[in-house]
Image (tube, rainbow, N blue to C red; front, side):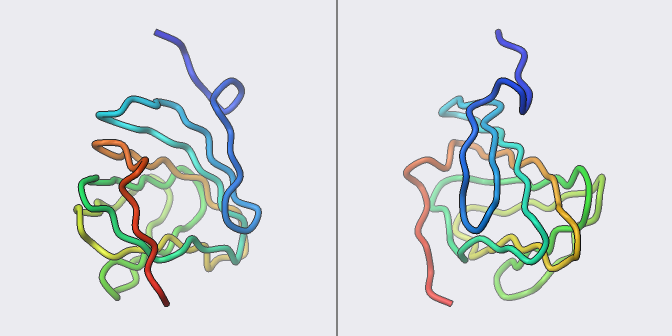
Length: 115
């Protein structure tokens, strides 16, 4: 077992200036800490098998789930069932930091959608 944090986890950049740190890379459960600057968004997409839980550590995350927007504030979260169209957005004026727990891993299980 290895203690992981943003200091020693695998880091990657995505989207427009967003960061991700892979805290647990297991194929049966992936845990990622992410940072989205103000005004950024991921592409709308769907996962065929993975169930996800987004948990906001600080800031505010807007999660569009099946066309409905949900404002997720610090110390709260939202579950995304497999097959659900969703998009994480930061519509606020400050960074949002959050955890994404996926079971199983989302690697190879993502289809980007138009619009």
